Length: 634
Image 1 (tube, rainbow, N blue to C red):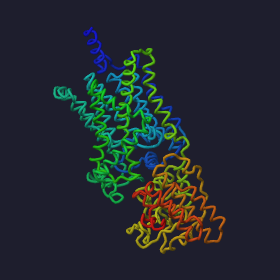
Image 2: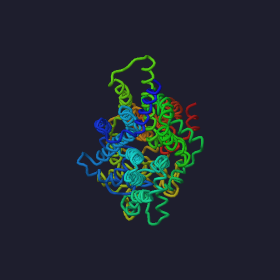
Image 3: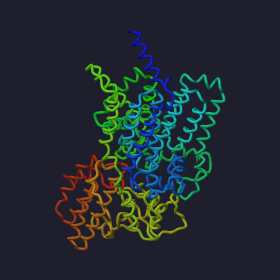
């Protein structure tokens, strides 16, 4: 009896390790198809139809023009993205969005193949890949133009190829992994960060092969170098119309590659964080995981991790290593940024590999719990019932995250870009300050080919010999503002005119007096902020911009003694408030000066929402201090 049990255990273990299960298996023929095409269909149904926020507009423009994205440049993505712009599919933005969908589906495919090759069952491998694909952050990056879906695909491609080399000891698999690693490093530095885990696993118990066969080792190094040569794109294209820096020496190349500019960008906010900030980011990551992976299902990761360390320690160590490198090590080594709502939102994109790791643990834990429950009741399920119950996990995650991940009707960024252009006339120029405005205007000039979208920045296609008729900014950054740019507008004033501020030689005063130059423009806004769940910091900025515009336009009508028009625009300002502390304070100030009822209410509301809306990175809307708000709210 004991021998029989021991024999059965031995067979299961060898099967798990892949010793008796070489790929491909006939029984697995449907697995890869489902792992790729099911996420692809879901992503296709929820794909953004046009440009979105964050870095989307920049990457679309870079893909279209073969320019240089912000450091470290993403050369691999830029080249493949350029090919994607020729897809016979809708507009250019939709094509690069579709590229992300293909890469997201590819990430699911290679995660499935990697786990299956390690010997996990078909149901567990498929459920793990799908659960990761339907997590909120991975899904969200697979339906917009960004680098993170491709980065995740390259990570799991490397792991799959290393796994095949470990099984077969065929050097071609190792060379393929090295080549993929070099190419993948040109997508995002996250692959470089996780590479120690991949390299250690590749060499664990296999290093003697490389010593005994130097050709294999030399070939791997050569393949890595060939892949990494994609970074030659940076100096070759640094003279293009879109290029953040001119790269003409090794030092300038290294500064670009190492993201040196971020040490001083925006006052060093991206590198001046403390250990406390690092812990806040880690806490935010684990807090958000609850909603990423189906709420209470996240707790299945604990028994999943324990089960792997008891029965598949190799996989448990790899996943733990990836989790540690992706979250705490990333925060400590990469230079922790100051913890703000904006930086927290941006940092979540870096954690896609860690989220996929936890998805695997959740599915393994779910399978263990199912087997444990059946054993406890002494029952037995039909052959297909057990896998079906495991596959219920990604279905639950899919249903839970569909609404928040659906971008099929997302027009906020496109509308805002068009509204910005409506402010401008041929010959006008905008001095770039905020990514929302700068990247969207870049997109509309170089992709949508609208000549009114003119950025006063030689990084984004401006010829310094071109002299603009009028200059605008997205911030109040004149000499008398609370956020002045002395080296640029030291003797100038920035006065609100539409959604943007116009640069003048003199100030028009404060409060209602600042509204004198406001002029109506034909804004087209289909969605109100209350219609969108969980506004991102970038979406909040857009709606705050709309709210501030209508507040000041109401002030202009009030000064012109057109009280009905003033009331109408002030109601619009209230309707488009995200809510945002600055917008409430602005309305309160205008109402107070106009003798309008409700000023005190807006001051109190500004104080109430300050903790959830104030962000040191959002200085555009915070030319007011908390002490000033408190004083007015008394």
